[in-house]
Image (cartoon, rainbow, N blue to C red; front, top):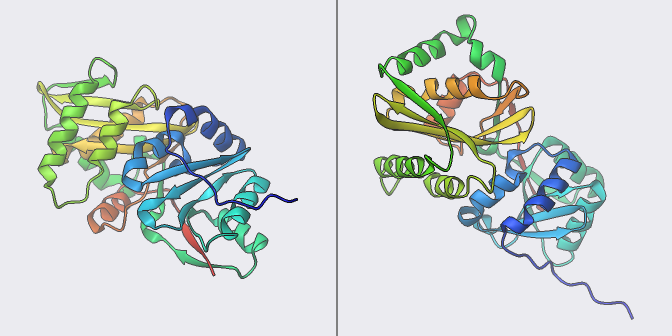
Amino acid sequence: MTQAAKPLEFEPITLSHREKIEAIRKNSGNTQYLYTFASLFTWQKDEQYEIYIDGDAFIIKNGAEGEQAYLFPCGSNEGKKRLIDKLIQFEKPELFSLSDDDKAFLEKEYPDRFDFTDRREEYSYIYDKKAQIELSGKEYKRIRHKVNTGRATAENWNIEVLTEDNIKRAIFLNRLWANSKGENELTDAPAAYTALSSFKDINLHGLLFQADGRDIAYIAGFFITPEIFDLAFCKVLDTRCDCFVKWYLYNELPDEVKIIDSEEDLGLEGLREHKLFRRPKSLKRIWKGSYK
């Protein structure tokens, strides 16, 4: 007698999932920052993430987007199809964070069964590290000016790698930054607090900036691969220093890093203008697929 199929049973993302998630992600060649264990763990409260792992693939339930909302599965092609097949037995899922390749996968495996929506607010901004360090030519003139202006805001800079000895200062600075934004403004301060509080467990890499004796900024992120760095958080109490802080981090990153993923702009006009001002090399298109 064949056993009846059951809906997928999801569970919270914990540190015990780290090695499995990263093994599946790396084996599949997935370089979207959203699928790193660090990002999933950091954002799980805000996005109401839960995970289901099936052999060589996993899928994330995205409760903040709805009862039938999921991130597109991560894993082998067979594993991704296996998970989608299980979902569509019980519901009409909405799959988020599709790359162009993921969209092509659905079009091939499920012809005319998904509607696709372009998600411009979720496009990732991709920067060339070397170009962002050198800032050569007329196209980078305004950024060079911003970097020099930021550096000139203090006579003495003390810049430290984030460690156990100074992480509490970064957490306090994160709180000051959030307070300066007000309660009604959308911020990623709670996710940043989670990342800072768990920085050793998620391999957070960053810098703490002290200007003339006052902690003024921190910047931090994760290594997606040895060549790609995810710039996840940059909190600056004096906005004049923003471009300088980023430029300094780029210089400090290992030589192996070639690409900076600066994540999405969330459709926020000011954030979009700032990310475009910094001259991205490309934008990584993102889709949503809705089962008909």
